[in-house]
Amino acid sequence: YLEYMKHHAMLLYTLYNYGANNAIDVKFEINGIVAIPPFCVSINEPKYLVLIFNDDMMGDGGLDVNVKVTYTDICSTGKYEQQENFSVFKDNFEFISSQDFECKLSSPKEIIK
Image (tube, rainbow, N blue to C red; front, top):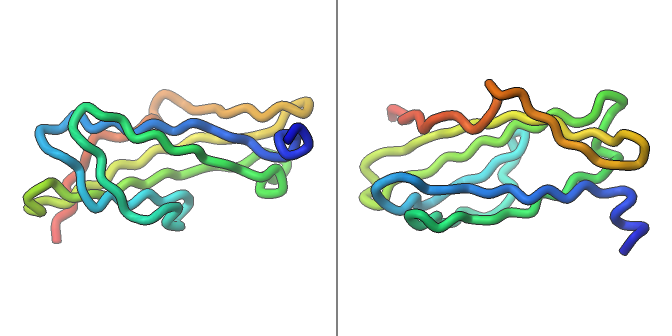
């Protein structure tokens, strides 16, 4: 286990749903790749995801991560998108994540079909 932890960064990522209804058919992408099968996030019940990054994925400057979340409302009348950016890097054998304030999870943006 300790050997594994030397080479992998594990980040707890929490998604909240502050909307008026459940978010359904949630698609969670990391750098353009769908990371897990679609899921639902209930009202006021956070969804916890563990993101694991191998140190081989990180170049000299670390790894820039773009998270994109798309979902529909419970009635499937609207489709929404949110994005967030952060970096993960290794410094003195310790994994660190960093994020500019402007890069935090964006407000929901309706996707026009």
